[in-house]
Amino acid sequence: MKAMKRKKCQNFRQCGRKAKSSRAKFCLPCFKETAAAKARTGTGNSQARGNPGNAGNINRGRKKISAGRRSGVKRCAKFALVVKGYWLDKILAREKDWEIRSCSTARRGFIHFAQSKAGGALVGRARLVDCQELNKATFLQNIARHQVPRWSMVPYKRVFAWVLQDAQRYAQPLHYKHKQGAVIWAKTWGKDQNQ
Image (cartoon, rainbow, N blue to C red; front, top):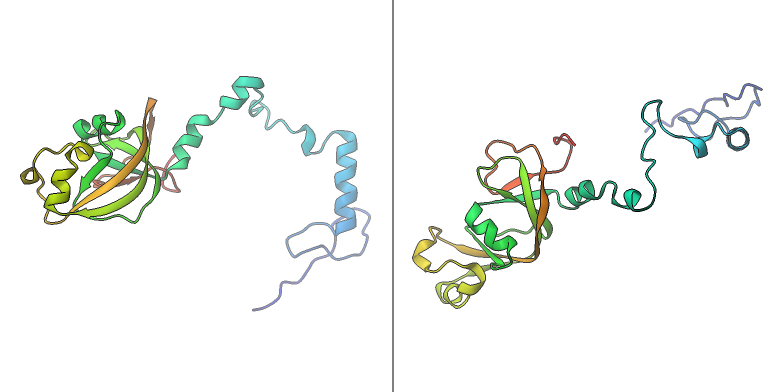
């Protein structure tokens, strides 16, 4: 790989030294000198308030603490599990902590919940902690955990329980761009999402 050639320092006094790297504008002594001068005159980053008309977050106290909390909740989980409304209500009321699915999952940690056919609204979250395959006997012993009363109601060849903890409903739904065709997982945070 070809080494990048370092350029000369762009200080107005033409110090003659090489810049610290190929992308740097100044050598290290000139950089420190320029930063100190900006701090003394108040034109440096310590006085930055954003662009005119956009002063940034200038709230103080409790307002400052709560600023961005909802977007932080949204970013803490990158995927939403799409669940039918009836079962979703039971999960968020903590009456059901096993979600029955036809496949296993290796995903762990916080996940959002999106109601099936509601499109674009995250209504709660929980921590996905385990996934286990169930036989008929185990299924029937744990009806209280998954709330499906009969084995015959499950249309899958293989049955898996996705184990959930710490379910909570959001006070207000969070919105995301639901991609058409997402029936199990919907991506809620990333490059393709407009935040």
